[in-house]
Structure formats: structure tokens, C-alpha cells
Image 1 (spheres, rainbow, N blue to C red):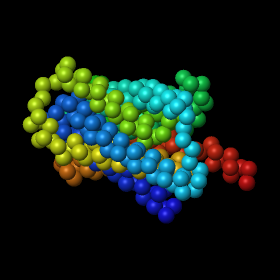
Image 2 (image 1 turned 180 degrees about the vertical axis):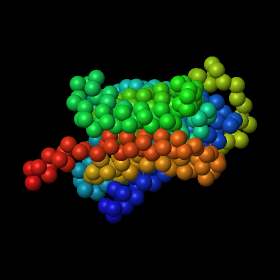
Image 3 (image 1 turned 30 degrees about the horizontal axis):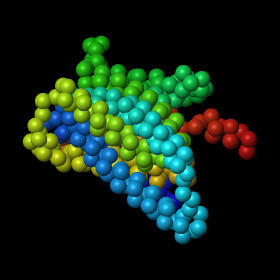
Image 4 (image 1 turned 45 degrees about the vertical axis):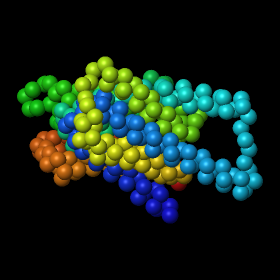
Length: 312
């Protein structure tokens, strides 16, 4: 059971997230970034609401059976709602920025390359810790150098020092996801994780709907034409994979789980090649390999391993 939860579930989450890039490419054929993200976020919010409701009812029944259930006071309920509202608004706004930049980039750069450039956030998260006065290990600086090298091979054509518009959106997306992850890390200590996810997708739905009204020109037929990709991205990528992540990380080695889930970038390239028949050049594959090495290196606590070996 431990092997299933700590190994298989993170791999399944990585597979869902990686293959979701294909759905996002397919969705971009009929919908702009704002419209697609509005639709998938509505689906995700409804799904996560039902999951959160089911979990809460299960926990209540379980506590009643054990005789440990205690009803919250009105003050506690008010404080809980306020914390969820504030955290959902902040995390959801960050996710709106990140998701729409990603979707715009995917439409221009394809699934495979997008998966690897997006994975830059894994390196950027600890790097941004510098601004929070957190010590950054040497391995992270090495990871940054590797990531920049890989990004150069992926995004800049030989002899041309320029990044395509889609790649630029994806680089900004990786930065936005890094900030979003940091806000999640802060607020997840204050509220229930599934409820926070539901709240943030409600915010993404509303904010993306406003952007659709301001900038998009879509019809109902456009949404129905890519209903499959919307449901896949909404239910599986945003709903199921997030829930799998929560279950997998409980009581697990966070480094192992993070490494397994970072394989989403590999699944993005494979699914892009198999389903969308995307083909990368040898230079771009080398860039992918170097970026994946940077992602893996950034999450291995080498310093702790060396310290543990020296003390044993």
C-alpha cells in the first residue's frame, strides 16, 4: 500500500499533467487562452467542490464513530471562511496569470517543448527563496545554469539570439507558477488543501470569464467542439492529479515524490510526439535532457545526504 501511494500515485499524477499538454494544444485549435482556461477551471471547481464535500462528510462520519467530533464555533467558522477567501483570491489570481500565459505559449510552441520550459518552475522556486532570505544550496545554482543552457538549446535557433513569442510566454509562465507555488506553500498551512484548490479554481473561472468578455470572440459551438480536451484538462489535470498529489505526499519522502512528479515534462514530450506527431530536433532533445537534469538536481538534497554519511 505504501509503494502504491508513494510511487504509483505520483507517477500517475505526472502522467496526467504531462498528457494534459496535448489536451491544451487541442483546445487551442478552437479556443483562445482565456476561453479555454475559463472552461477547464469551471469543470475543475465543480469537481473539486464535490471531492472536498465528500472528504469533509467522510471525516465527520469517521470522527463521529471515534467520538472525537467537535462542531466549530461561529467565530472559528468565520475565521476559516475568511482564510479560505483570502488564500483562494491570492492563489487563484496567481494561477490565472500562470495558466493563461501557459495556454498562450502552448498554442504557439507545442506540447513537448512547453512541458519542459514550464518545468523551469521547479528550479525557480528555491531560487526565489533568496528574496525570502532563505539560503540557496550550491546545487540550485548549478541547476539554474543547466536550466538556462537547456532553455537556450530549446528556444533559440542556431545563429539567432531571439526567443519565439510562444517560448517567451512559457518562460513568464514558469516564473508565474513559481510564485503561485510559493503562495500555495504559505496558505496550505492555514486551510484545507482540496478546499484551497477549489477556491482558487473558482477565482480563475471568474477572472478568466472577465478576460473572455473583454478580449475574446467565441461561441458555444467552439466550446462543444473541444469538450473532450476541456473535460480532460479540468477533471483529470486540475482535479484528479491534484488530489493524487495530496494523497501521495502524505507521510512520503517529499524529494522522492517531487522527483517522480517532475516526470510530467517527459510525458509531455512523449505524448506530443505520439498523439500530435510533434518532432523536435536533436538540439531541442538535448535541451530537454539538460533541463530535466536541472529539474532533478534541484530537488535532490545532496548536502543532507553528505552530512548524513559523514556523521554515520
